[in-house]
Length: 314
Figure 1 (cartoon, rainbow, N blue to C red):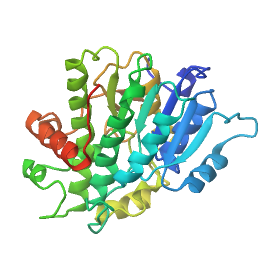
Figure 2: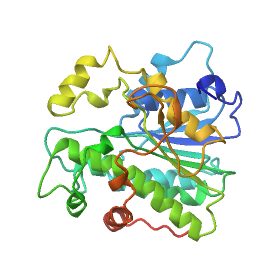
Figure 3: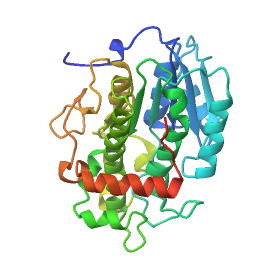
């Protein structure tokens, strides 16, 4: 298959349920829309519920039936909000299983170091810690699905960090470099994938649950609006010129959760020469020296467990 597009998606997803974080703009909105209009139950988890509803209203067509889409409150940077959201999902008897958990929400390269309500650096809190805890709290309903998929969102920015010592300062207390911290949070998506696969393998669930990471490519979304430095300025300038649309940027994630040919442990992103654009394919991770380092992976996993209190008992 040379070009995987939405035409390859199943026409009827009415027997599936997906939870997506961050559907109030960009790729997340497209993910929710494309899955819901094919009948899947979709729960969009967002800090700003009204913004998420308006975002869907803007892209849906008059004849679309999106009655299976729900928008619920979740501030992924707040561990308490994550727990409250997960409790609602667990107590909702209409949710029998979770076929796909798409960890899509994220922020990028904040110019100044900011802290979450729990006292963690905001990029790590949003991109990593909240998703780590959320997955652990939803796992009991994920394993009830037939071949469920857990998706963590990485980036080509994972190639930015070069120093393994950054893993000794994951809260960026000693040094805060916006792009390094963002890059580490995107490397964490690969560490998360591999650590989770290891747990599932030990528990005999390795053939049942698929865990993958995706890279959306260079996509014109609000993610770049507040990013720092020269990179941020350049990206904002070319945003409407050379970047892919959110519809194109959503394809790696859609393929990851819907294409049975995608292997467990894959990294899916644009096949183009730079990795910035193109149709989604299984590709190699960026910065493999750090992203595939088992010692750094264990440091990240242990840090996330310690700070969130996540329990991975199946």
